[in-house]
Length: 98
Picture 1: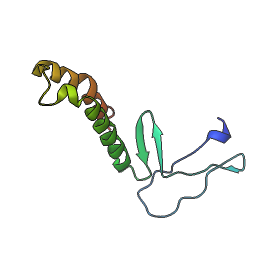
Picture 2: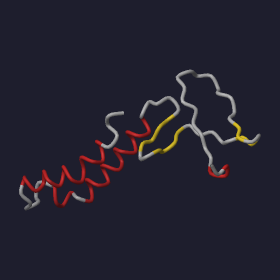
Picture 3: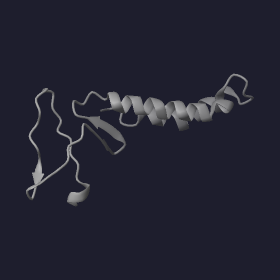
């Protein structure tokens, strides 16, 4: 493990400050949130950061595809639904089991 790239998050439900983590007597910097496998985990596992980022990502995709999915689009409803299932739904369903 490369110490230069090491960052950790201590998951806790208490408000107390957690002790500093060290490796080979070198302190590892602490963060309040971390991205792991596409999931944004915060210190208290509230998922608020993850939900906020996923909503921004989903809104961006929806805005870029509005000309295909909007009311004035000539695309059939079946094709609009197919676009939804293939492009938009995977954004918000990834990691939903957690």
